[in-house]
Image (cartoon, rainbow, N blue to C red; front, top):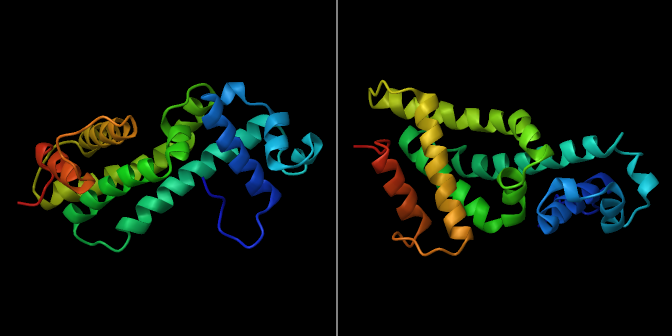
Amino acid sequence: MSAPETTSVSTKDRLIVSAVELIVEQGSIDLVSMRAIAKRAGVSPTAVYRHYADFDELISATVAWSWDRFDEAVNEQVGHIDDPYARLQASGEAYVHFALGQPGLYRVLFSIGGRAAVLRKEVGLPVFGKLVDNVAAVLDASGDDRSSLEVAGSVFTWIHGAADLRLAAIELPASEVEQQVASIMRDLRLAAI
């Protein structure tokens, strides 16, 4: 897990990265304490309160920071692509590559319950909205009248499943991420003809 790239990492960023690391290690936000986060970040527990009003604010910032990293990773791969089919394919690939390259952040986003489940709705839904828009562009381009929200839900489910299976080191028929995502897009009738 890497902190934001700066010459000097701020205390706020160290606290967030420490929180992510501890959440991943413990498997739950509910098993992480403010004191443990402060210790991991190398600051006193009282120093945390200079940056965050309370534990919930720090955890909210941590989950939001994690979603921002995910959103940036996907946008970096698709932001320059005009073709809706290629953009959807690239976003699926970026999703799986993010999960494989940043498994800790990925776990914070999707695999941890408790408070994260509530926060996931607040900060994750706008990111999902981008997928819905992308799917809508593909459906429009192909004259498909299916619901973009429902189809995006299927895309998300299939891509998420592919990422989870790869993280669990389960051998998949398609050896390359790109092949598997292309297959998913064909099976969901979202590939260019």
